[in-house]
Image 1 (cartoon, helix red, strand yellow):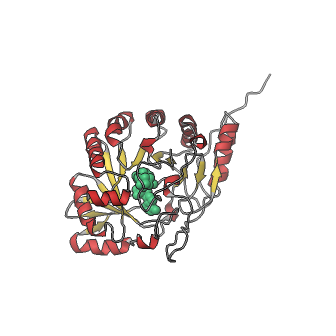
Image 2: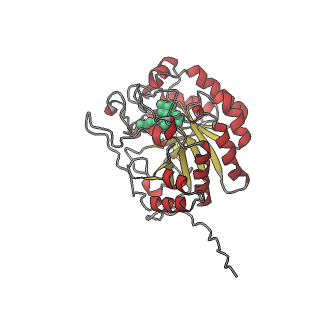
Image 3: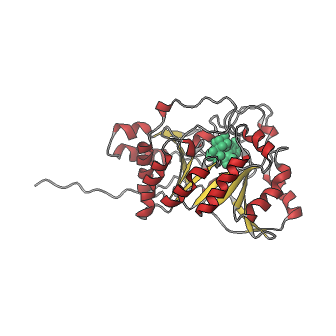
Length: 341
Ligand code: SAM
Ligand code: SF4
């Protein structure tokens, strides 16, 4: 009699420092309809389309991670909503929400296309989204994003509100660009019921200009904000690097992401997948593993799971970001739009 091979359950992912990997960020495209000054140079060369994983392949990869215990997926980019037929991927991934193997499916977006997508996103099961917005001034908005239009983004936010999506605003604090506007950003976000997170610029990819001109330590920002606002540390955690306070005057939440002035690596639970199937174990390191080859060479995912195990074993203890030497090359050569924020 032929012995039946018993299928062993797949193990969850824990790295060699004991960190459980339960969060995957997926950059579905490196392209974007903006050219934010801290993120991209004006004349970017994007990947040829043939190098991108198809949406079906992205679904298969994400599903492999869900099978290994990933409970949260964030779709990012580039601008994820410019990827053709992106709702197909959201709908497919939402099946994991429906069967209880995934806790959350979220999105980071510049909101340029949100008016078109907000309703459908909510309908498939997306509850929360992160919207990147650095200023409320239309001219500044154009200067920071180069190609963006503030009015379109505001319409996108209104559509998100209408659809019932919970919004968190991400604002990169930029020296001499929006540093005088952060009080107003708090007021705006909290008056609309949004959380706000401030982010330090990270030295990723060549941009036109010098990073030291953009970098504003959030320790300085926080000290300044305390003249105007009463900030109370709160234990709120989203599993990410942000540390939160409650602003007493507004009752709203304010987060600080400080990779440069503060290390958040010890509790890192995430890995990042690019649109070509490269897995980065750390935003601030070059270590990476190719998952596209094992994905394509074997239809039954065995090779893929081996490759995922080998990759997780490479997750480094911490990142290597430094912005200290004028004119120095970025610490990490790839742009944020490759790995996704
Ligand atoms: N296009 C979408 C957006 O802007 O929300 C998603 C991708 S974008 C790369 C994700 C986040 O990364 C944005 O909040 C953006 O502000 C942030 N970001 C991009 N480059 C950065 C850098 N060099 N340092 C810090 N944050 C950066
Ligand atoms: Fe595009 Fe987002 Fe990068 Fe701005 S931050 S250029 S919106 S990917």
